[in-house]
View 1 (cartoon, rainbow, N blue to C red):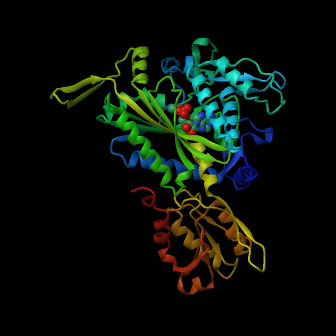
View 2 (view 1 turned 180 degrees about the horizontal axis):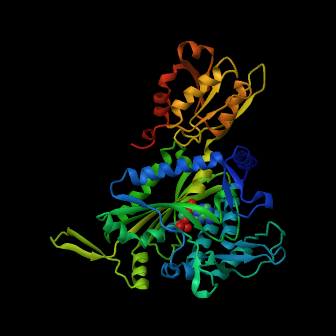
View 3 (view 1 turned 120 degrees about the vertical axis):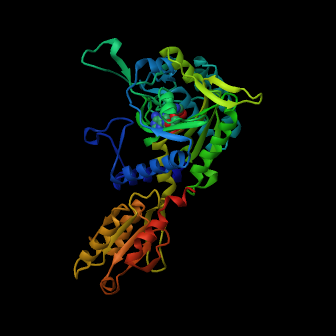
Length: 492
Ligand code: GAP
């Protein structure tokens, strides 16, 4: 990380805490590693991101519906899905610090460092060698690469490494009063399996015809060994996943289509296209025949935000095998020979985005420290240039002063608007300070009630990004705010 990007990242983390977006979990007990809480504005921003995703995926698609499945599921599900045997990371320990690291993560950091130092040849060669080793699950080779590239433990500074071993990422707990192996259940490491095991329930009850999708937003849990980069790698996090069920043989068309559709969802927020890139997987997960990541250029380098996976019929076939229940769909449509396609297990394209990573991306992208200095004085402001649809607070209402009936009038205006928009009322401090506080949480509009309001029922509206003010009729505020924060600006 260069000094500037390092500083930007540190500033965003500090800002997130200072302004009520993200707090370390259990902070008064010195925190819980890789677990975070969302504060009063963070939870609003997170909800708005969920709404944006849900509207785009469910509301805008007649053939996609949403569900909310339980976190606890039958333990056999994780045997069937391959997570019990295969959901693990290659770990390596440093013998001097006794710290444990993901071997691939150490190598990725080295690749990023080579890239930053302009050693692109070395970066590329290491990337290829690492991908090859991961693909072949060649753990000794991963260790060799760590040694060859002289990677030292950031804590002890030594290169005294153990062998590389696999470590399962699922959390487990007991269900029921008696702790017994038979009652061992897992906290889901992905929301997708809740969709797979419900696919026929939804298909039948909703009379869904292929192709169709099932979407879900929910918590997932992974015992990540390395807590890193703030909310990028958490032990408890949230996913927004959609499984799209298609006729076998058509999956690659849908895979391409969802890849594009999902990138457009990101770009509609106004993010610079150059900040995004696709990264095709070389090492495919046990369930996939094609997979790509949508990566974002975070201050610490490109990182996966979303995955699009062609999961074949792996999961449904496995559930059929392990549950003994038929997972087939009857397709009445006629093929080229005029015969019904009949019974088959659908293929699945999955789109899976990490809500917390999307949240961080949004904060970083919006964070701006603007220099407002003039010849006369030095000045600056911190402003979150969030899309108005995502802003936690849509408008703040200020009486110019705390007397002369202005607070009462401001509250009267607020009462008319608060059902439709999340608003804040503020009367403390000078107007300038109040503007700055709202800029810092990304509020797109500040409405000031002054003495003229009492005469002609007009107010000033100040726009966050331009800082321009205009005088408008108080009765028009619902239309003005409504138009600027309408989801139509993002989805149509
Ligand atoms: N169902 C497929 C699946 O879970 P994944 O690539 O393992 O695929 C999907 O996860 C997304 O979930 C990732 O792109 C990432 O944004 C997010 N994610 C995964 N692990 C995470 C973690 N430990 N903390 C925060 N987000 C995570």
